[in-house]
Image 1: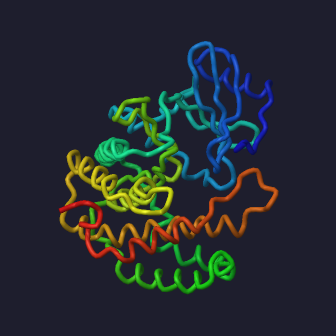
Image 2: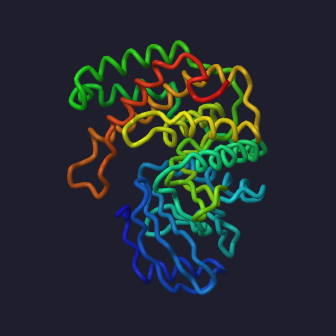
Length: 322
């Protein structure tokens, strides 16, 4: 279970008393998630999510994340809304950790991704990007191209333990991406971690019911966010690429926010970068997570396969676009 900080009954009663959200009925740890401690908090008024931000989250970045959710919610995007205390402050401290309460979203993450899920995702992602254009705060992406080589160097000596030759493969890919990364594309707020477990649907419905977990959000190339989603949503369990899912993602995105010719041309490079980013963070966690840790690190081999696929792609037609 991803609960790293224990919260006593007395702690939660005192904390909730700082809000006007009713009295505590129950609270229990949430197993999903690997970065923070999350509880489902039920009060006499409604259910909420209580998050304690752990050591991997920079406390200086939290005003950006909470401010972004406030902004997106105000535009009508269905995402968690930070709950402000009686004093108007949303970011507080609990058990020695920065903490916040957000609204609870209804819906379920898809267990088996279908093409219609990718269509709904494309629409929701474009709506997020459009709504984020009016957000005035700025946070650079620490896990974009400039951050990849230092991350690799921190775990390079163990790369070949995962797969022989992986170290050279990553080094060569870094050389390519650093030389070819497109910097002049449209920029804005991106989610940067919009995996299926962060997207909710109502059963039997095609539209997204909510987006969650904005704690990797930042400012970067908007099309890079699309590339992250292609990697997360458009590969089958056998590692084959589903072009129908990709076409749905891209075409429905384009109905809300049109992609420029330059963005379309850059998709193969951006997809390679997105693959490498998650390969590197998974490699780092694979090497550095203690064997007795509460969370099992994700296997980096999945993103080796995805990277190799995108390395063979010559243009966006491989992703279902004419």
